[in-house]
Image (cartoon, rainbow, N blue to C red; front, top):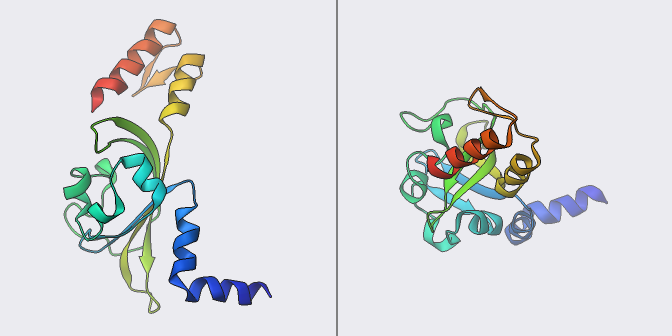
Amino acid sequence: MVNAALDKISTNPKNLERILDNIKDGIIAHDLDRRIFYFNTEAERITGYKRLDVLGQDCHDVFGAPFCGSNCTFCDTAPVENNPKQYAMSIGTKDGETRQVEMSVTGMLDEQGAFFGVLAAFKDITELNDLKIKSGQIHQFANIIGNDPKMRQVFQQIRDVAA
């Protein structure tokens, strides 16, 4: 019964798209040339870019080079292995706003096991980080340690002007 339901989902691309559009993580998928072929509703909300504006575009051209910061494995050459990565970073939205995201990036393989692209899932953690700073839960930034409220203000200012 479960396998039959999964078969219905996987054989109908619209069902899979509905699932991905209802996930509360931004999802971007691109090919070996960094051309975006999937961009879900949450990715639109977080970045401010519309799906139709980014599909078929190089992710670095749309979001700035590189969108994934120093963790981009597509800056010089395409990666040859499936090497999942997780990291936090700041991104700029279409409106120039800075958002902090947790990014999870993994390679995608076809039926023959050949690497054909990248799937990036990201969650907007900007408000969570702001609350942590205000509540005193974050007391370090880039190996600078300080628990005083004035130091937490400095950490926030660094984040605000970093973009």
